[in-house]
Image (tube, rainbow, N blue to C red; front, side, top):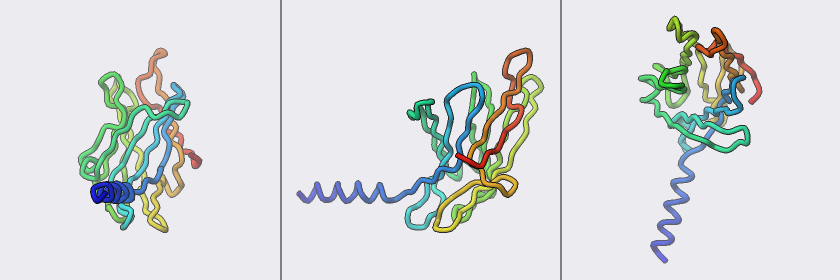
Length: 166
């Protein structure tokens, strides 16, 4: 009975260690799958622990998950790779675990020319230890990627529409 109580207490303790805050959804016009970026935080302090990207089917079934630490983000991570080519990268050189920072979203505009653009997203700790993302001072709910096509083939990301709703 003691071991059951210990295991139960350990299980409850581990599950209460972290909270998750959904930041925004990422989608595009090419397919029905979408991703959700969220922050996992320390339940006690509300501080950043990790960033998670989860891919969902149109039926809201989880297809895959990847998790990055603050150290991973400092050196840069690949958020999307298609056919062996990096399409979207995330990096944050000033992430403060207690208050947030800038996450630079770099995206491939044209695979033929090798052109890249970036979008600066502000990760902010809000009231009551919650987290949110802003771009140019406005709430980010969805990033809608618009494909750049050449001769009918996708060669990159033409633009990113920033929508306030999730």
